[in-house]
Length: 380
Image 1 (cartoon, rainbow, N blue to C red):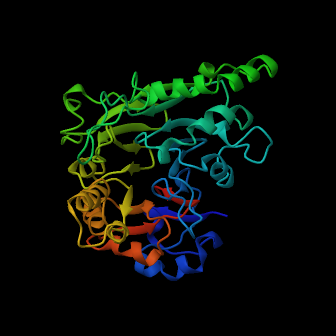
Image 2: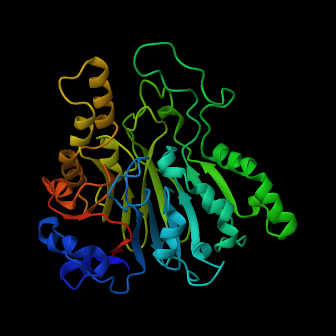
Image 3: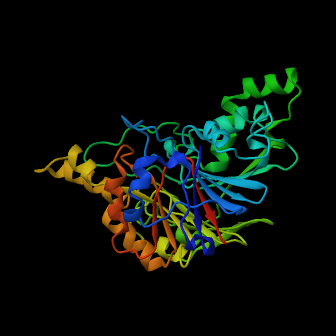
């Protein structure tokens, strides 16, 4: 079951909510400042496939790994591929053949966009690629896969001591295109079995991976300036969406990207993993929806309780600066002038909604605390 909400002109009145949002969610609707709404036939909608943040499988939480889908007409685009994407896409009834064995839900997949290459954002990319042929992935049009390029150098060692030998020293920081090629190499036995025994298409007939072309002037030194202030740039456009990107502050990860999708119905922005940065405000300016990550800093405080030594303080600051704390999220959305703020990539993923309600402080728009399989209609 899906919980459905409306954004835009159709959101002026309140109606009944799908049961999937749970009694607790419905009871707190007033304080979250959104009304549960039907989709009203909207053809453009945001589907939260997974809303958990980070690699932990949080105790007591059923949230799946971070991933969203933007549905535009008869196709959809996936943003990040955390654990559970394939199952969630079927549960969300994406595509046109989600009820047919081996023909959905990937029959309408039109693109994959990765914000950065941490495992919790890419771990199920392989599942989409290697099992896609048996879940609707077609060779009619190659699916574009976009994400950050090669970092160029390993991060500096955090804390004192001698740096370790890097993993895969010949290519320690592959970008999206290289990573995708390496997935094919790693699963060549499977791909060749499908090719020779099942007469399935070759991988390169199904998708094409690309590194997002961040302008060179912003790529100078990932260790000292991983998020220079910049204007968003457009790198992808088809008949349904125009996609722009900016660097975000998830140091030492580089490049880490936020994305903006502009459609005829409205605009949706995904922050990716980031600390507070003016780049997100520029990217999200006057957007209909901003999907933003958040961290409850009481969690790192519990990991590193005071008094902290220098190393512990460094680790604590590292966590809260590479993510956005609760008190900063609302003001970011307010300054950007967005209509609706949707919280996703919740760290930790097992906090009750009441904790996240504080993200609405300093924000005059609608706040939606994201849950897996929520559906948010875009436009009137």
